[in-house]
Image 1 (spheres, rainbow, N blue to C red):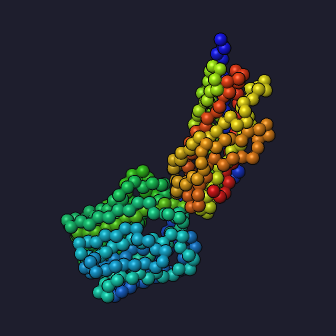
Image 2 (tube, rainbow, N blue to C red):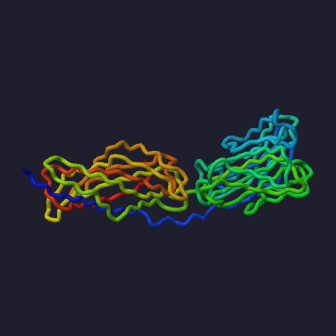
Image 3 (cartoon, helix red, strand yellow):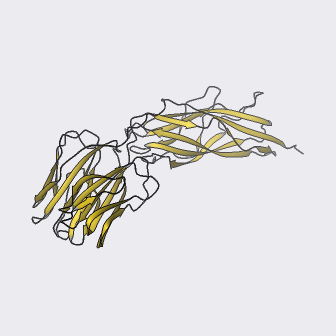
Length: 382
C-alpha cells in the first residue's frame, strides 16, 4: 500500500509596482458661476464670467416660474444631460443639467424652453476635479404640496464615493423674504422673490442618502431636485499591490492527482483619468522544493476573478479575459499572461480584484513544501 505523505504548497506573491504611489487628488472645486439669467419665450441663455477650462464639469439649473409644466419642453445643447426634473404642481419644470468633460472656451449656454409663454430662469456653474466620464452618481426629487419652512430633498440612493459634489435646485412660491441653505450647504443661486434657488455641497458623507434641509420665510410649498457627481480619478499613476505571501491548502498524496485552490486579493488603482483602460498580467517561477524537485510549468491556473470597488472608485472594470488562464512558469519567468483587464472608460480608481487559483499536484509529486514567486504587472490599455 502506498504511504500517505503531506504535500504543503506555499505561494509567494511579488507585486511589481511600475509606478510610484498615487498622488493626492486635488478634490472638487467651484471654478466660476453665472449670475441668474431671466428670459421669456422659447429660449434662455446663462453667461459665465470667463471661458471654461477643458475637461471640467458644467452644471445648470433651469426652471419656468409660470405654470408651464404641461406645455414646456426644456432642451439643452449637444453634450448636456438632464440629471433630474420635477414640477411644483403645474409650475416648472425645474431641471438640473450637466455637461461632463466640457470643451474649453464655453462662455454661455442656451437652453430651449419649448414654449413661447415661458418665464424662464437659469444658472450655470463650472467645477474642476469631477470625473470626466460617467460623473453622475445619485439623483432625487420631491414635490411637496404641504407648506413648510423646512424644505427638503433627498437622493434616492446612497452616495457612492468620497469627495463627491452635490447640487440642488428649489422651486418655491414667489415672494419669499428669505431662503437659506441647509447646514453644510452653500448658495449657488439665491432668488426667494422669484422662488428659484440652488445650493451645493462638496464631499458629503459617502455610504448614505444625502438630504438638504433648507429653510424659508414665510412657509411655502416647494419642489426640489438633487444630483451628486463623482470626483475625478486623475492626477496620479497606475498601481498594483498584493499581499507578500499566500499559503495554499496542503494536499495529501494518495496515488491520484490532487488540486489545491486558493483566492487572493490584488488591489489595482488607475488614477490617470485617461479612460484608456488597463491590463493585469502575471508570470511565475515553477513550484519547487528546496531540494530542486518542481511541479509542471502548467500546474497553476487562474480559474476566475471578481472585482469590488474600493473607496474613491469612479468606475468598476469591464473584464474581457476568459478563464481558466494557465499561469506561465519557468526558471526564468516567461512572457506574462493576461489575467484581468479593464475596458475603455472603465476601471478608474481603486478596485479589489479577487483572483481564484488552482494548482494541479501530480500523483508522483515528492512530499514537501513547494514555493513559487509570481510577478504581477499593470499596464495601460485593455
